[in-house]
Length: 212
Image (cartoon, rainbow, N blue to C red; front, side, top):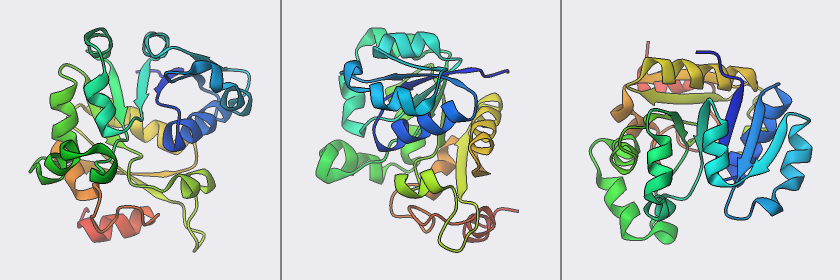
């Protein structure tokens, strides 16, 4: 699958910054939020291939969709949006924070399949790949950690084409992808795990998660 266009739903710390990085890497990017008129600074930073639009426009635009919204916002997605995501590769960056997302986050943290399973249930038919959720956004922009090592990005999905897309995007912005396994293995890099928010290198992530 050749990816040239990326629709970004949720243009905050991760979605916004990653969108700028992808735009600079040569992809066409469509940022979206509930207030697309406020996204012009991101569009300018991302370069000539960037634009802003509604959520529906971003989903329709993208060969793949980067979904970077609070967990509680999944409940607010309307049926048309969920339908538009069916069959799409959706790179999900969400994390469950009870102080922000309420009881939904508590349940998500207790799910044996981790956030991958949670998001797959919330978006039936979408080709979910978990990636870019485990790195602090300020470190994401630098692409290297304090030791000067390239930051590793754990990736988990059941769909192999989705895995390859996430690997390609991570590499294109100067990050080091680490394929962990199927979608439920995303629980190994969810909130509270040994690699979450550590900006660890790929080799450190592999060692901590015992990946060959």
